[in-house]
Length: 159
Image (tube, rainbow, N blue to C red):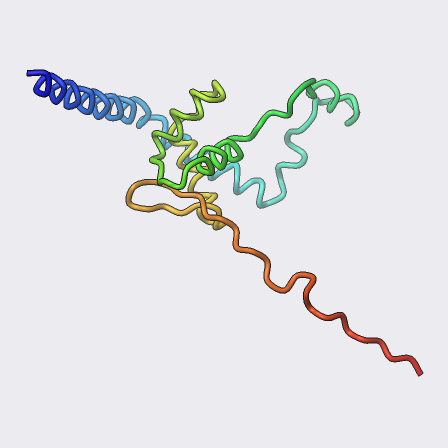
């Protein structure tokens, strides 16, 4: 009897987790397209070099005062990209994007939408820092540098 109840509870738990992920996906779906479009527009503006004059300080204030008004004391806030790399760096197992989003919320208290996590993961994949597998996302370890200081220095001959 205990095994039957245990099996039932395991099935119920798996069913609830699946339903929760589906509900989360349905709730985020209307915002994902708009977020993707905004991210593409922002990256195009940054690549075009037009972002430098548009933001970064308060209007009408010298740069030193604008920076002082926006700076905070204490720890430097982490970017979503850094936090994602930390989550992926903990385990060697692949992690689904929805689980990465959940871990970011749980560990740092920052609710980063699944669409934003996916965009960051795609950017990291293009940079060669992570890769997508069937089970989820995996961080790629950096290859060791070859050559480095072991190469002999060229000899200079003076006459």
